[in-house]
Image 1 (cartoon, one colour):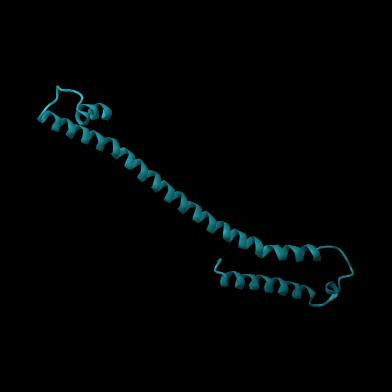
Image 2 (cartoon, one colour):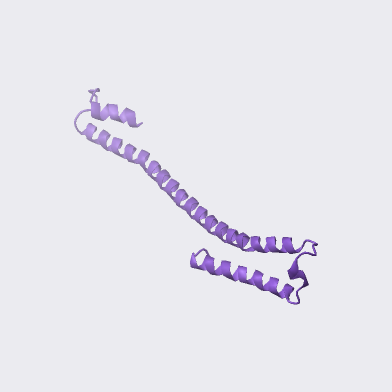
Length: 125
């Protein structure tokens, strides 16, 4: 439709339309152009809103992944310690200490507290 009205009004190839009729045809051409551009503008706006939404979702997922990573990092050294002390060896002098169990629990608590302080200073938590 837009091309037809363009040929009828702006190019002036047809002598049938003269005088006031060309003014009306140009008006119809303008309205037709506006009707074509309105859905395109709406589509562009919807696409940009979808991009904002996806960006927000991605940012939120990154924050959740950071918290899960911090929790994993906090439990990794504890897993290593319990794995080492879970072996059945008699050559570990700490096993025969009277307060060896409490010393190991204290060491684990110190590791957790140290990692928490580190992550709070980095503002990861």
